[in-house]
Image (cartoon, rainbow, N blue to C red; front, side, top):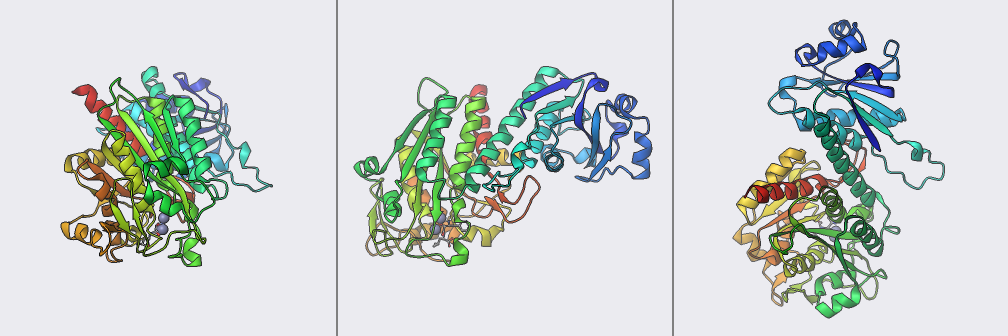
Length: 503
Ligand code: BES
Ligand code: ZN
Ligand code: ZN
């Protein structure tokens, strides 16, 4: 979506598709009569007969006979108006986005009633509709030589509204930025591991840094060796690809203080190493950098919207391979923090990568930390594929985070991290920690291990192993990468920035 027009004169607009959102009783919404006058006097009749459905997310298509200027009209049911909120609108308009993409629409005009319920302003509607359409239209281009996907782009999206133009335009821009960032994160996750190596991920981060004027550091193997990053280096030992620690800094204030650290697991391929994955469990492990993708996606939102909050992003990028050089179960390694780790399972590699990345973030001034990772199969057993698992050591920080996740509709559920769990992570005859205390409740061991490196710094761990990749099409997009947590990470930074301004 390149441009938008906020148009007051409804009769004037020309577009391939006219999208009309219809809540259960549209006649009660402000502006409906005016719209009926311009569009078609038969609209109430079609609603009454049931030819147009108001059921939530139900789409009815029709050729535009009366409404000149449009090739097609697409009605989307919005359900009970009183219940409507940003999240439901996002879902309904993602369904619209899927239709627009399927119909290869080059332009669309959207009529959104200026809903007056407590949950929504006109700007909220434009934001959620834009974001939803952008997310719903996503398709990974892929590498098919006969692909014709490349010519699908929605050039112009017009909102028909008489509300304040500047505010609507701003809401549209933010919606577009959010959707674009998620789609970029999805692209990274969907890319094959031979093409998205740690080096390529670092190149991508350099592009972001150039575009948004972030400071960037990329540490390679040599720099990691000099600093003593024994944990990420151990994971990388079996690989011919250089590991990269990618560090982006967004400085909102002159003093580098009150910094939030976003830390991502960037395992570009996880074979399991010598604790080898079974062949069926290995397919899909190109997505083991979903945390890194979410962090990079969030950074592009931050770069666009420039909130008043200092942010450091740290990504540990490497693949986890087997070779004569690879690390082994029983190895003891020394992390950047100085803590020693007994390796019991080379497939529990994400926590090792994150250990050094979290330590680096702390050493670089992070005052709060959120790590995001496709860390454990355990989170899928515990919560399924539609919930991100969380751990924390700070109630207030977590509360703020949960508010952000409620705004974005990305479901997060916290699991406990007890002293007993920590005891098991610290149990080893030969080292300070072990990387695999057991299979029982092991999402907690994975995250809890990372928490050992966060120490007293307020910290939230997000395990997206279940939510980062969708086995089938879902509300907000197709099968494959979801870009989960991109939006919530950016939203939490925006919320913290707003809290700073209010102080
Ligand atoms: N990358 C995997 C976790 C994963 C599983 C991501 C399924 C996406 C889908 C992680 O590195 C891993 O292998 N975890 C092990 C840990 C175990 C060895 C303690 C697991 O979950 O089985
Ligand atoms: Zn693994
Ligand atoms: Zn992994």
